[in-house]
Length: 322
Ligand code: ACO
Figure (cartoon, rainbow, N blue to C red):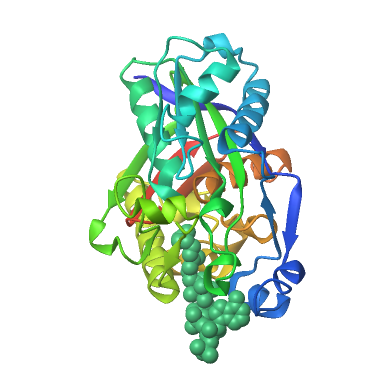
């Protein structure tokens, strides 16, 4: 049996930090309100000449280094992003060129804040079926570009960043299982209602921004991610006690706490990093994973359940031994 095994992680946050206090000079809000409703104190914002591929490249190089893998060993590149540099080629192709990997498949996956889980699922299947031996999986976003910075209901939540993992084929898990879901009936609750084919004028006018029904999204995100904990553990005949760590999508502290509570996971086992980087969409889970490995929280051999939830709705999980 072939499994995919995590062998390196990396992440990158842009230099510019936007604090709640600075936000309060831009919209009618304040640090206390943002902290009490979201637990977010600051987020990082890409420079004007810094693009999603730049964040992806920085995270990827750190992950390759941690894995001790040369770029020429990579035979699959997947980038999860909602904020691609260009309409085409994909950000994965741009990244592949920068890393000097030519030939192996490279493509983007778009499942918004669940994007990294979808990308990881695809990479895991490539490896399990023998189609790839060493995959680079990245989640990277410049979400600040699709935020209306005059809308206090959304602009307090999001930030930019990148996270990456290297997966290698191995005889032992590794990734035990992945679980993906989507339900397009909720397409209007969280979206950017314009793009190249529809409402293109708003893109040209610089008005293609994220809209959100905050309360509804909150409710569905908690239910989706709590249910995923049960589904994932059940599929592997494991229980919450077997888990060392749960990494929910880093959307906001209240959602993370509610997921842990509803799923019955010990709060000490729930990873929370959103406070200092905000919701970085597809980068959120690999960022939290990398930070927690580097600060020594997550240790080799431990069992980690990661999960994402995003617009669509889309949601997914992966259970792995690191
Ligand atoms: N500062 C001050 N007041 C605010 C702000 C703000 N930034 N934003 C809204 N308010 C006001 C509202 O106008 C409202 O005032 P009113 O009662 O006079 O009308 C009041 O605060 C309460 O607004 P609610 O929307 O009810 O606030 P709520 O407690 O629901 O918190 C929030 C809003 C934080 C957006 C919450 O609904 C939430 O976290 N939703 C989840 C959204 C999310 O995380 N999305 C991320 C993308 S999806 C994902 O990644 C899972």
